[in-house]
Image (cartoon, rainbow, N blue to C red; front, side, top):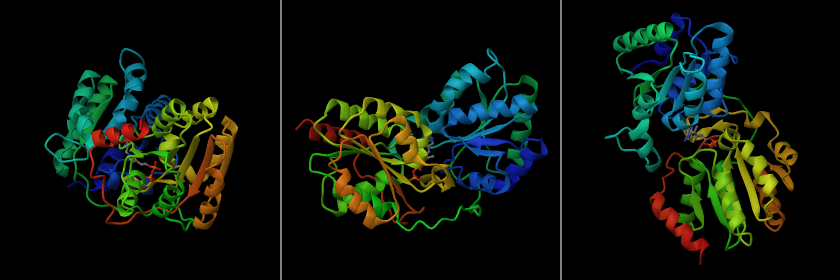
Length: 375
Ligand SMILES: Cc1ncc(C[n+]2csc(CCOP(=O)(O)OP(=O)(O)O)c2C)c(N)n1
């Protein structure tokens, strides 16, 4: 395996010291190392991967230095547009070193949302004309690959990708953790909100542990899973899936269980919710200020006022809570209020170590939900 420090120092020896990206579980140790060692203006955890490409391009324009964009392969979709219309040699011809975590690599078992993306990861790079290599897990070989990648980018001014398999980087534990006084766990909060729902209400929950915690809650309560759409992939789009349902079924209350990272990833969607003004829409953001599901790297979630954003774009009512007691009290009002309502629930980072994963397939989930919605 490669030491994150080796990778970081090797790039630094070529003058590469600017990083932007969205964290990934396969890159957890590398992302943690970068978070701890790069200064705040040289490691920007972007709202989404497309934004990271923009940051990287800006850095290159200002410095002439090759920047790095790190991401999970699910972020490839978000970078296709900047790859085709910003960095491509047919447009501005800007070199960016892409570091892409390869979830769902064919032959390696992974969760359903990674299977398709895993199959098309290198194909998408091919079709976009991006040269790439799968990074070796041996440092001396990796060093040669990095050297070649940089020589190629310097000569051609084109992007290049290092594709990262599972278990490429050695362990590194994030030191630079923002401290706060939050006491409520996300799982506790998810349960309290789920408990407050009416019989006909449905939930669209976001990518990562929020959906897993909701799934386990239903199982523990001996309830079915038919009222919940677990958006296992498509990070940042749960609020729009919920909006689609809410507009089509105005008599039913629709709850979006969002994460701060996901809500911020496509924050413009909040303006669309507000503009459509569905009275039956409740947007709950479980805000731990982190991409907890992929290693806990910071988001700007706790450094901004999410309810104020929602208010400014036109949500009908906006609240923020930090304790389970106040959450339960507020829910008794919110569940009968006219939407769209934004409820920010500030929670601490972390999860139960034995947290399971959905045992039903995405298609089973979809069919059960559609039956429930059409009963
Ligand atoms: C487009 C895209 N980029 C990155 C990921 C990897 N990913 C999965 S969950 C997650 C973090 C989600 O953070 P947040 O919404 O704050 O919820 P939390 O995990 O903190 O509960 C990330 C980055 C992804 N699934 N899709």
